[in-house]
Length: 157
Length: 157
Image (cartoon, rainbow over all chains, first blue to last red; front, side):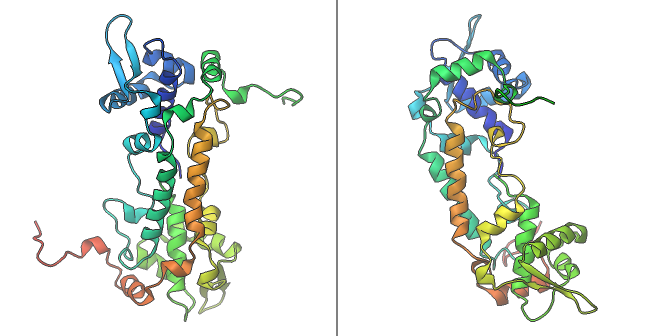
């Protein structure tokens, strides 16, 4: 029940760009902020560009901006565009060899569950992910993973 | 968005046992029917036994039976019991290092989507998976993957 890192990182790229609307953003900036290797991000940014979620500005002060307003970037749509495989179990996938596929009730039930999952995501836009832009910008500029900030009073070993 | 093979195979074990209520079932039979290596099934059957879904009968004509009626084995419950990780994206997992976790709206939305997914599964029991027991038994005894049976009139290359 995991989304791929590809989808996870795609959403983070969009979040980063959405909370920095005043400047074109470079892959290096996103890489530094999240600690994600730059080479993972190149294809992601390219894909998001091809789908119109990002707009690429070339040149010395180049980078990317949102290709449309955050409120018009639907999260269900992004996840469908980035997740390579909704093959929940074998009978959803190419090359399925499960002998009971035709008589088994599981496929229909899992399809219904998957639809319910995506229906929820279809109800949200990128704007809903960045409702605290100032706090997000602060976290991104500090670049310290949340879990490294020890709560006061907890002993370190 | 995949369930693990462990969950997939757990459900298949339960299906196999459910459609053969008149005899104790061996791991070998399930392995032969689905073409799943026996060593993959040993732990699965053990786990399903510990959770009361299967009852183990020892001895020469031993094997497993359902531990309770199929209608009382809830699919959402089985998936929760077998799926090791509902860590949809990094911020759901131990060792999360995503810097924006506290300010980001994604986590709440994905939690809601996951709940919707599991809510659907909670509405079904093992009985709903095996509503065509005769057809299931037939597929399981033939043991030919559905995809290998060519529809009439399709040319083979």
